[in-house]
Length: 233
Image 1 (spheres, rainbow, N blue to C red):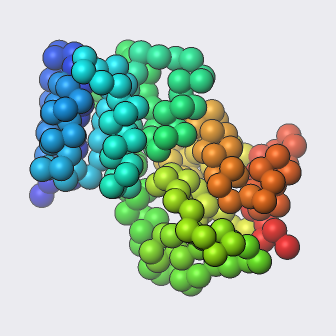
Image 2 (cartoon, rainbow, N blue to C red; image 1 turned 90 degrees about the horizontal axis):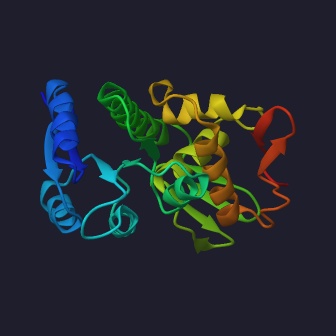
Image 3 (cartoon, one colour; image 1 turned 180 degrees about the vertical axis):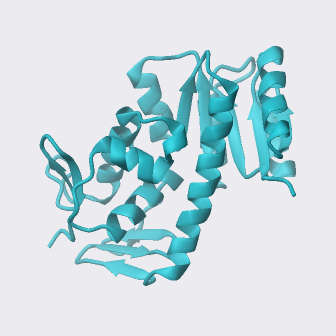
């Protein structure tokens, strides 16, 4: 049985072939694209469970592809890129990427991250069905089954990892988690700890759900220790 369908978008032929070989070896059904246009066509026809996306493509930026995908789907998306600047990384995460890897990288690590993202997605979907459906306070309403969020009665779209992070916080109120622990619990140990990923998602999540993101009531910083979630009341 296949482990899932993966869309690999990479214009470097040798690297694309190497990634596809590793994924095929681990039981994935692999669809590959060398350009942005080809990637978008394959995304609609193949309906992958996860996308591996190069940021720099010959016909368009991977960030534009990510935005197009996020308009219609919440499938996990992992950027691969030569760019190492923190601003580029934060931009990628802010527009809906779940993870990123900088080139050069070990294809085996990429496979491990993909497996972790798919496993976490399945786990969070199961938790959403098994837990109490609703979480509410005076201004925030979260449907843990449908994974939708409303702030003061208005729907607020969250990206997949933002939803998973919020769901995790709701299920562990008033507990302090270090950034690297949040990474392990929400992204998965296979991904390798990177606190920049956690900090970027918390920054974006606060912008969307907090009354004042600079003085958050819900996701609070415990200086020197990490973050904790309270009901904001």
